[in-house]
Length: 167
Image (cartoon, rainbow, N blue to C red; front, side, top):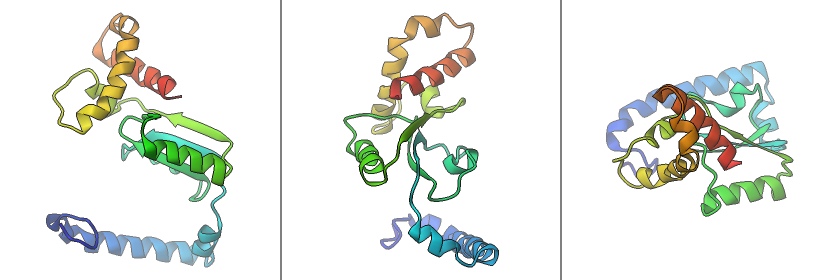
């Protein structure tokens, strides 16, 4: 592992490409708006806290059409909010007490791997332990979910039930 970046040495060959993409992205922002980064430094006034899944296909601010600084985001596997998780609770406290956020959104998504994993088992810790939170939601709605016609419908409904449970 490379100490300065926390990146495993095999991944080091990809870093120059990522850094080049970052420089190109930053240059494009400045070309469009020379004050872009200064404004970002001065702006963090979100009205919403988004608690969502860490899934790379769900970029929180992009799917709701907001710019950086307009949405405070907490993401984890399965969009779980566990009151025993000091990270999640700290994010909520910071959002409300420091940033003055007035709305909290819990957003799940269909096709969620964490929800699909809740129907199975055999994952390694700590992921297995984390998915247990979604399995408890499944257990509490087992009769309703088992009554659905197929696994796809069951997973779909558990996605919805999981969001409601996190709220």
